[in-house]
Image (cartoon, helix red, strand yellow):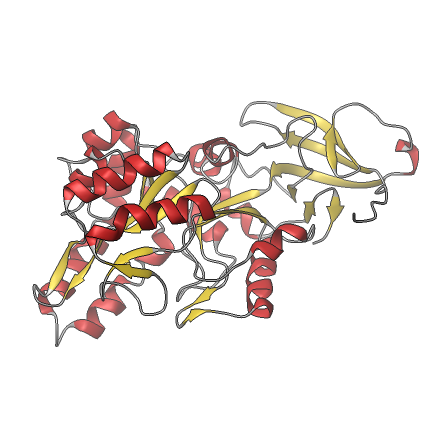
Length: 366
């Protein structure tokens, strides 16, 4: 048993954004939990003031991973701390080969919802990242990662096919249907990396819950996503790297390079069209591969640039994102995970880039 000492009471004053239109004057953190009733010891409480949001969500992040593959615990800790300082206090880890369960025992690090390790087709993904398997093993590996994760499984839905010289789907329809059904039987949701168009219909009709990146959405597939309620996490700060990737592959894979440029050029139109059609959109940065951690504010700003209204872009990293992941926000009795800003982030999402205070489990840590 660990020794538990009662924390000092923290008083949070100003404008507490429990929801986009549910604004309260104050809350208290009592032993690390939110209370809206004045507690004993309130007179001696530390006080912070400002505009208050629930801890931000990065719904596509990789802790324990860099562009080479798995990293050591010290590097994983640094990644998590960088996200924390940016106000990201809840991460959906969209695939990692590292065991980061030790983070769950650290009250000073963000909370993580894990999707296990990526599941990819043999030699069809970044080296050292994924379980690389053939279709006949897909159901078994999905079941394994469903049991290891926190309610999510991550597939690699498409990748460059060197024989075709372009992005193609990785899995046959029948195997995908069986694998997603097995994940759902085990209580897990399934998401998939998809850059291109080819894999989307099979994945959605097979029952997938989310698509990462989703740059291949078109006027033909967007209605299907909306009808089925399939969410997207556009990772626009990552899509910004497509021109450089295309330039690097131009000589060897010209079809792929041209395709990546087209996907990049229409990225904002794609996201805006999906949002306008009613497709759920959430914030994710894809940090931890080649991208730095701590980019959550930049991704929210990118969603606004794409045409998503500021309040909806804010919800995609705050109230809406937490509800989607089944985690509480600024609710009575919830962990006191919150971020305090100088100004109203609903009026200008750029405020997110400069937190005044970060509070995790009732402690002011940044």
